Structures are given as C-alpha cells and as structure tokens.
Image (cartoon, rainbow, N blue to C red; front, side):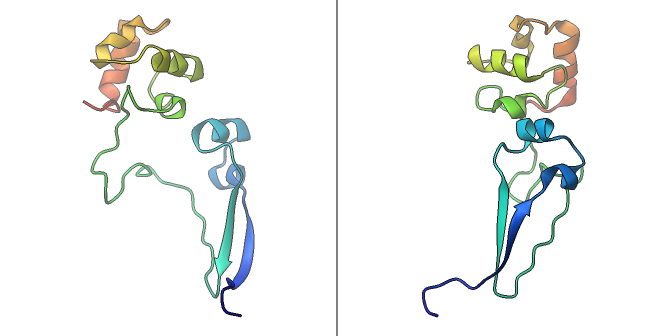
Length: 123
C-alpha cells in the first residue's frame, strides 16, 4: 500500500546480553532508554558488541573527552572518575587544563597524572 512502511520484523535490543554487563552500568554508559529496532522489507538486524575501536569512526580520527563539553557518562570513562566526580567536574566548569582537576575532591596529583597519561582528554 502506498505511504506505508513494510515492517517485517521488530524488537528490543537486550543490551545486557549483547555487552555482557549489568543494566546499571549500561544505563550510565550507553543509554537509559530501551533500544528498539525495526526491519523494513527484506532487511535483517545483525547485532554485535563494540570492540576496542568503538570510539573511532571515519569522521573522528581520535576520540577524546572534552572536560567542558562531555557528559557525566563520558567523564566516567576517565581513570579515577566515577559518577560523583564526573558531576563535580561538570559543576566546576570551565576547565583550562587537565592538571586543574586536582581541585576536584578526591583527585590528587597521582589521580590526575593517570588521567593525563590515559590520553583520553582532548588537548
């Protein structure tokens, strides 16, 4: 029928099974919404978990975390940064240099050094 999509399959992506992680971790790092999908016509869905290159794409030569723009989830990818510290980093914006993170409660020189050495923060 003209004007209607030919939906041949649909479902919900079960992220815990796909990523072998618990729902809380996935909610904080991937999404807090149900991932739904539909297939149109003869299309099929092929799911696979990201490998170590998950943050690289044809458009981004290098993935980095911008201290002034990143979400709490992205900031939590940094060494020694969990949800609470990520929230503090967001509240204390703007940041000029990564080394200024010593102002965050619980991030001493050694912790900030680990963050710098991770090379995850945009320069």
